[in-house]
Amino acid sequence: MTGLKLPLPIALDHLTLGRAALYEAILEPRSLRGESAHYPLPTLEESQGGLASAAAELDRAVSGLRDAGLQGCLPLGLLTRAWLRSFTGPRTGPESAQGDLDEAWEIAARGPMPLFLADIHLYRARLFFRENPYPWESPQLDLAEASRLIIKHGYRRRKEELEDAESAITQDVSSR
Image 1 (cartoon, rainbow, N blue to C red):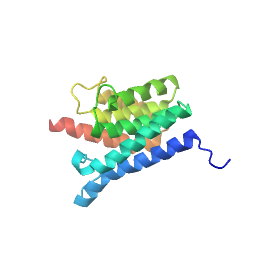
Image 2: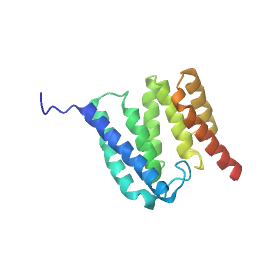
Image 3: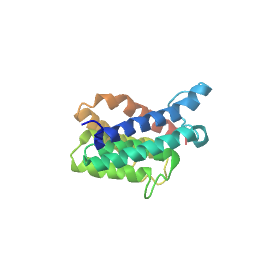
Image 4: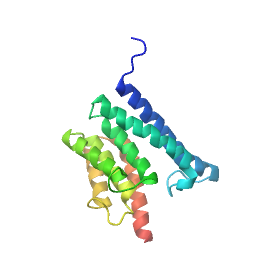
């Protein structure tokens, strides 16, 4: 069976490469300036090359996850691509960060996949809390629902991320 190429492992490889390129594009400009990795986000110019590489890998990952036919894995690619698209492309409308989050939501809600639902709430709040109008009800409601799901399902590895998002949103609201 040498030479056999299975779609899921290949798609997951592209997802890993895309995530690595995205993390590098976000973190490298800051480390060169000696800044924190949290906020503010790097400028598009600072991370353009890495983001282009991430975009290509993540598009291949999402396509491969679709081809593999396992709906339960597709939100992994959609969430990461939404994060990328929040930097590089349209935030709302077709082929956007919002579109990826909405598609991931549809899959996770049908599942039911409560851990993905918690992740989607976190992504929506983190990526869109400055959008006016906010594409869903409110970032505060998304964070509250993420918190509820994290506690209910023992999804403790997202606790720090939830606290970081709550802090960033609270600081942003109080600085307005």
